[in-house]
Length: 215
Image 1 (tube, rainbow, N blue to C red):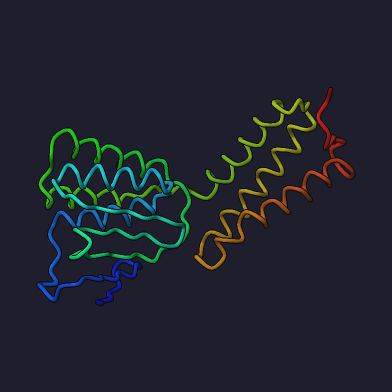
Image 2 (image 1 turned 90 degrees about the vertical axis):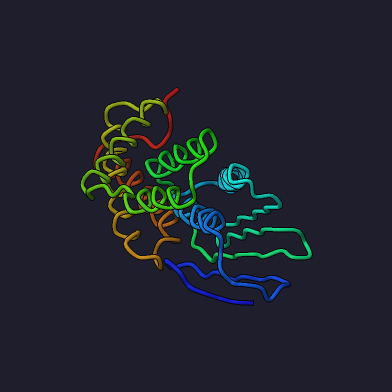
């Protein structure tokens, strides 16, 4: 068993042979794609399907993929000579821009097989271009999304204002807590608590809004 750390991921190679430890370019691409795809927020099924499709396009058989929120495992070869690479990862948020570019790469590789070195270069370009939005834009997006949802729940003007304030507060919480990996897991519960307090405060102390949908 050999263990190595690369780009924040831990890779474990288990195999039954003491042969050369070098990794073929096609295999390296699949492993890097699995890591980048998980980081971009692919669901388990989506990531597994794309890795298998890429493996088929490179003519690699006997590939097995297993994905859970904190672990990605890719195996190559028959059972008696199987080599398994395990990536220890963190649950990731969805990055639609990156997943869209990754889908384009998968489509290009399947329709017109790419050389492994070319595919690796394109994958690295995608990873380096991960979308990062300004903090005010993120907070404004949360506020607008909340405001747009209020009429769907039969809210009036006061409820829309209250929802906008709550959405902006949630956006601020998201921006503040997602700066480090340690606080990432508590974003959702803290945001829910803040939104609840904002709604209750708007209903009882400031905007005269109602927390119950209108008939």
